[in-house]
Length: 264
Ligand code: PGA
Image 1: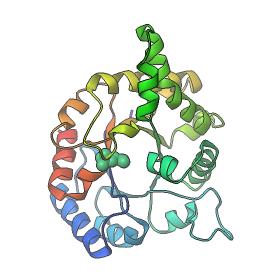
Image 2: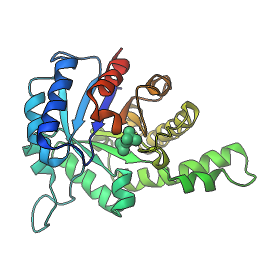
Image 3: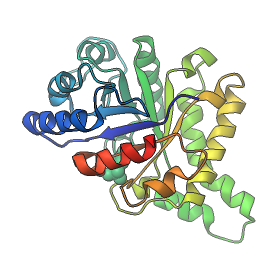
Image 4: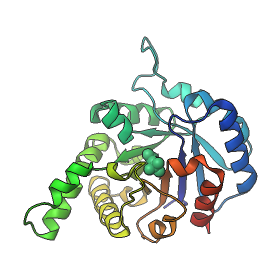
């Protein structure tokens, strides 16, 4: 298993000047030699260059929030994997719930994006997670606990099988999974340690079933309202290998505290 990983997803926030200030402040605080955990900053496309310049020579890597499933051509408005590599990205987030649910991204599109990204040497953060309705339906009625658990995990299982089913063990080496319950993203309502542990265990079992040789080595992150106040609880769950942070990654203070706590 690799080091713990902290990913700051800035979403559609920050102009170039603001992105430069934030990333340079993060580099100043974390230091060029910070090695206790792996840190990735994921700004909007328009700020990739500014952030790339600020983090150059540090141990912080650059990531993108999305990618298209073709490498070039007449796809107005899209950005390809080789373009991301050219812009200095090492990582790409794929299948974020905001893209799945607000923009209708499908499992098939996600599978293509992963496949192409890996072929260009990008590391992939694949986001999966259940909606509030899916969780409510899964826990309703008089079922036994293991059936409830199975039903809660069912949409996540489908997302992972559809995204990764066609890959071999080798392809899995560049993939990290982020479990992000949709109801916890940007809502301030994070999942409890127990809920996180249950899903992370299920994801691990599924990965090992699908990829007996490397399923145990894939890092599984938690995301959804991660902040300074809950990071210790979240990281106390054995199965959590890091976090995907949205809102709290936009403040140097909170992001730094989260990184420090994870790396300590
Ligand atoms: P949040 O976002 O931390 O603001 O909930 C997490 C994410 O969407 O990755």
